[in-house]
View 1 (cartoon, rainbow, N blue to C red):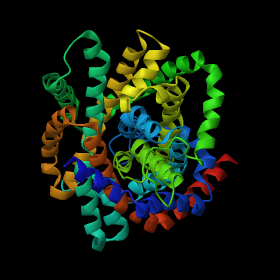
View 2 (view 1 turned 45 degrees about the vertical axis):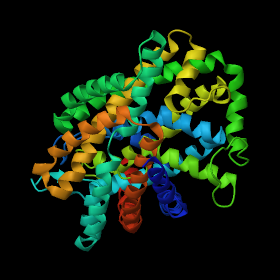
View 3 (view 1 turned 180 degrees about the vertical axis):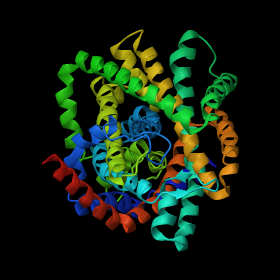
Length: 456
């Protein structure tokens, strides 16, 4: 089973998907003439609530929409995913994660705008957004099979298997094993049951409770993680320039790449690794975040697109870079055989003996648990589209059982399973976004023209 899932993930993450994600993102950058990037200041103003109107349609404000999306994206992909990328690809993998992040900003602008522009209604008559809705409302009913495909893939892609797996591993490596407590199936099951209990309290309360919890957790977890990594970089300040330069140099030499070649060479394999881990980290083009942004209280699609665009900047360009530098400057990527969260834990433990691993444990716990809340919402939206809003709550029970599965199975199987379904989700998301891009361009020009006139 493990080999079958690994082969499946490798197959769907082949050259066609790489062209779709990277080529699609570059297309968005070019046709928009980098327009969204010129208005990052305005995007921050929107995020801060300057343009909020409580009478606008939707369920949550701009800030709650972004933090709900970030609760899912700023998760274990930033801690364990970066460690996986470096352990397989070396420092050069981070450069291609950055490329994925920059391209992802353009992709998220388009998909976030479409999530509001082509909102639909569920079977209860409530306004909803996301790829399945912008496919049907934007492209027409004949494209509904594509929307159904996205929703089916999303039922598996939204499962919390990777996050739970890595949180369980972190508890074992950092808390249990050093204190002489057996880290066996019984311990993993107890951790899984505890996570099910915590998650059920928030998840069964619906979107409002999820968004309120995320709005409190996400800013604090990013600040805490930022402070921890800044301490590590300060303690190894003389190493920072060397490794920062190495990220650029090795992006085109792949000297430390240990994976399978692609596009005829190891550099191609490194590019695919970086894009794949970047997509897993920031989810640009996958279609999950537009489901959160589609619930925002606004009648101006471009504003939500601008807010969505900030996601990859925070996630990949800031948080992933912090993790990468912490792993690189401490040297653990060369001296440890560990992978995933265990490698990051070594970096924290080496720099801050005694307290370092426990600080990372706190960050990991907040990252993972907040991700659990958002992903459950994505899964219920997919089931709601497929089986009606009255049945969406059944997904939560399936989701809570999967937490136990994630706590007790192997890392490789979890990464490959979720990677594979992420890839399948990206196909309908990106195809529809590319076809609907002219609508976004038209709307953007009108919006920014009006914005500039209002400033004069």
